[in-house]
Length: 281
Image 1 (cartoon, one colour):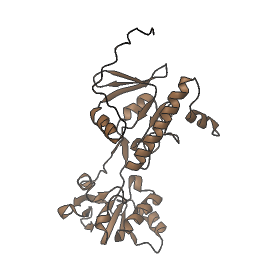
Image 2 (image 1 turned 45 degrees about the vertical axis):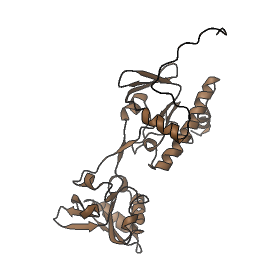
Image 3 (image 1 turned 90 degrees about the vertical axis):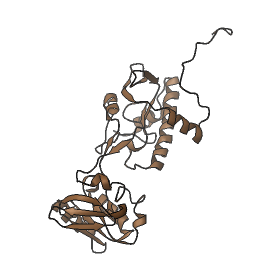
Image 4 (image 1 turned 60 degrees about the vertical axis):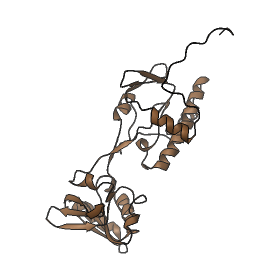
C-alpha cells in the first residue's frame, strides 16, 4: 500500500476492549452473547458461523466451549431435589451433611457401572455412617454390586423400584418413596445424571466424532476435535465436568489454536497434526 494511501475502513463492532486480564475477559464474555445457528468449514480452510440474525463470522480456527445440559432422571421429584439433596459431585456437596446416619447412591445410568458406583459410595461414606445403593428395580445389578462390596464397607444394596423423590423439610435431606408403598429418608442422594451437548447441531454440521458418553471426542494435549483446526474446551469434551478442568482445557485449546494458525501461515502441519501422525495405527 502506498505510504499516503488511506487504509480501508475497519469493520464496525459493538465495543472495543483493551486488556485480556480477568476484567477484560469478563467484560467481553458479558457483552458478546450471540446465538449461533449454523457452523461449517469451507473449502478454503476457514470456519464460518452464522448467527440468529444471519450474520456470518469467519475464523482460521474454531473453539467449541458451549457446554452441556444435565438430563434429569425420569423419576418424579428428581428435578425438585436436584442440587438441593441430590448431588452429582460429593467433592462439591454433602460436606454439610457430615455425621448423618445414612446417605444413598442412585446406581443407574452413568453411575450403574460397578467401579463408578463404588467410587461414589466411598465418597458418601466419608460423610455418613452408612450408605445405601439403590438400583431402581435392577436385581441383577444389585447382586453384582453386593458381591463387589466386600465385608468391610458400610454399604447395603436396595433393588426396589423408586416411585418418587421428595425434598426434605427446609430443603434438607430426601425421602425416597418406593413402588411397594414404603419409604426411606436419606441425608442426601449421590447421582451423576447423563448429559447432552448444549449445541449438538454444531457437532452434526461439522461432522465431529462423539464419544459413547455423548461428549465431543478430542485429542490431547490441545483438545483438538476430529476436524483439524476445531478445538473443544470445558464440559462438552471431558468426563471431569468441573470449573478447574474447564479453565485448563480452555488454556490448552488456546495453545492449539496458536499452533494451528501459525502452521497455516507457512503451509505446514500443526504440532497437534504432527503428534497424531506419529501415533501407531
